[in-house]
Length: 459
Image (cartoon, rainbow, N blue to C red):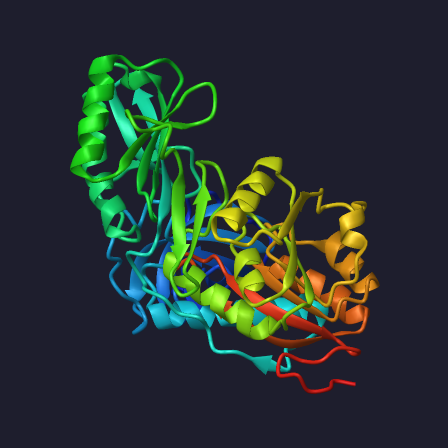
C-alpha cells in the first residue's frame, strides 16, 4: 500500500481539532495580513505567515470549511520576512505585522482597499493615488497600558493584552511609540510596583504631543508618598502628571489650573489643538500632518464655499479648511468635543467657524445642516456612515471627501454614493498605523454636476 507524506487530502469530513499542529503551504495574504493556504481542502488562515512559506501552525479555531491557526514553525521562509524589532511581537496584541517588510505592509493594505471596494461596491477609483508614508517605528503619540494585580504572585503586571486573550503581556519596550513615551514605558513597571496603593490602579495612559502626559487611573485615592513617587517619575521623563479618579482627569501640580490641557500642532498650518484625556485625536503626528495636507489638496475648496466637517472632533480638519477661506460647519456627536473644537477655533483666531452637536448615525434634523453646502468632509468611526452619506447625496453636495479607518465600511458607503450618481475620482491608503493590519484610506467622491479637484467640468 502506498503511503502519503504531507499531501493534502480532498476531504472535509472532520474539522481540525483546537491545538492540532498542521502543515500548510501559504499562497496569499488576507486583508488583515494573515497567510492563506489550504489544509485538507479547507481554507486556512495562519497568523504570522507569509505567501510562499511552508509552515506548521497550531489550530485556534476550526469550522467545517475554514481553519484559523497561529504560526508554529517555519519550514520554508519567505524573502519578505524580517525579524520583529520588538521582543514582545509574538504575543502582544498590538502589532501583528512586524514580521513583514514595511513595503509589503503597504502593498497589502493597498490590495485590501482595492479588494473591498470591488467586493462590496463593484467599483474602482478613476485614479489610485500614491500612499502616504511615514516612519515605520517611533510614530505613536498615545498608548494605554493595562495594570493588573496578580494575587497569586503578589506583584503588579503592567503591559498590553495578549493577542486573542485577556491575559497581559508584561512589556519592557514598545518601539512604535515616540521616544519620550517609550522611555517612560521602560521605567513605568518598576515604578508602579513600588506604590503602596498599587492594587488600586486601573490603567495608565501615555500621551505625547505639545504637552506630553502620564494619566494614572485609580479606583481609590492615592497617598502622598505614592503621589510623590509618580511626580518624580514624571519629572525625570519631562511629562505632566494627571490623575483620573471618579471624575474627569485633572493635571496634578501647583500650576495645574492654569495649564490643564493637552495639545498637538499642525506645524505647516501653524495651528494648535487643545484636547483632554479621552478625546479622540490622531496618534500619528507625521501622518496626521500629511493627511490634512492631502485633504486640503483633494477637496480644493475656494474662499467663501460652505463646507461640512462631519465627525469633526477637536477641529483637526475644520480649522485648516477655514484657513483656506471656507465657511465651515463642524458637526460632532459628543458635546464636550464640540466645546473643545469651538475653543480651538477661537484660540487660533477663527471666530466664524461654527460647531454643533448632532447624532450622525441618524438623518439630519438640525436646521444648521439644511444650508446648501458645496463640499463635505467626513472622518467616521469604524462603523462608517451609511445613513450619513445617503443624506449628503440627497442634498446634492458636489464633493465628498471620505477619511476611513475601515475599508469594508468605506466600500459599503462608496456603493451608496455610486448608486446616487457619484464617481469615485481618487483613493489611496495612508500609513497611519505601521506594523499593524489597520488600513486607513482617503477617497474623493464627485457628483456629475460638480467640478473635480482640478476645477475641470465633469459633466
